Amino acid sequence: MASAFSYNSFGFLLILVAFSSLINISSAGRQIDPKTSIEFIRTSCSSTTYPKLCYESLLTQASMIQTSPQLIAHAALNVTLSTAKSTSALMVKLAKSQGLKPTEVGAMQDCVEELEDTIDELRKSISEMGQIKGSNFGLMINDVQTWVSAALTDENTCADGFGGKNMNGSVKTAVRSKIVTIAHLTSNALALVNSYASFHG
Image (cartoon, rainbow, N blue to C red):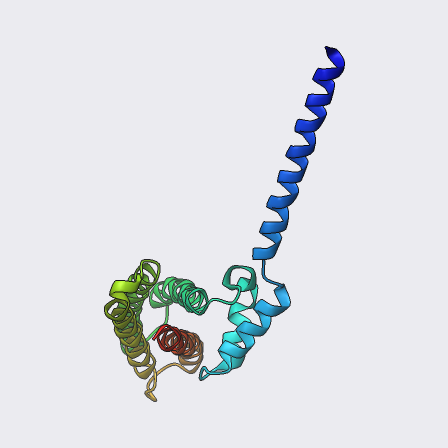
């Protein structure tokens, strides 16, 4: 009786091991080689206006992006949003700095408002990208393209506000460089969204 139980237990154990191995093999088959993901990012970024920035900003997301046109566009939007939020927080601090001219404070406050609009537009884009479905793809991707384009316009308006000669040199340099980076990231994200739209179409 005991030996029969042992035999049955052993047989059941073998089935479990075989089943687990099958699951592991199946899972492994779905995984993408990291080198393939990295090459996909490099190739995708080559079609953007700022490929080096694109590649460097998305490289750490390779395991999540894999080889998906949708996921790389989504990741690019998230990276841009994160940068916009940190820059906006910095701008709020800078606007309260001592020794700034009224024109500089005004430009800073205007820029913070533009960045708030950018952040809102990027958030809506990210949310829409996560909900895109086949039947409504055209309408939804068009919304995303419109919002990201609007964000880019807001950023350029902010940068233009620091183009005058009346601006403090160090403040102007610090602010413009950060805004330009956001604008470049946004431009890249828009290019990847457009590529995704073309790929899907």
